[in-house]
Length: 127
Image 1 (cartoon, rainbow, N blue to C red):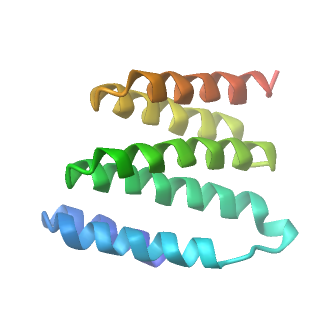
Image 2: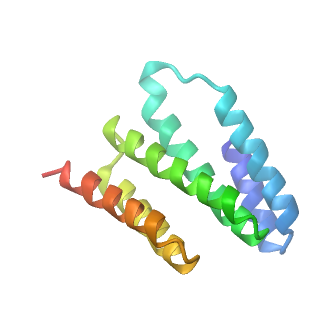
């Protein structure tokens, strides 16, 4: 999945939006087919959250707002799970804040508020 994420990044750099979306979908398919061992669950949720975040971006670029928002909402849950299972909470909160910013820019204030609330919840869990 990480290699597919890298391919997606490289395709974006050369303005191959459709191909980048295809690579992202392949990464998502790989992640969903994988069952992590218990000691790998945190990393699994972390990577899946990033793949979904990228899916949000790719679907927006293809003007498929419904698919983009669905990916963003799922990403929020995966980021929450990653934090709950031990991924560095400041890093998770930063990603959720970034997702909130991008959702706001995409004119989806409800989902942006959800991502921002998730960031606050994750950050509050540290204290």
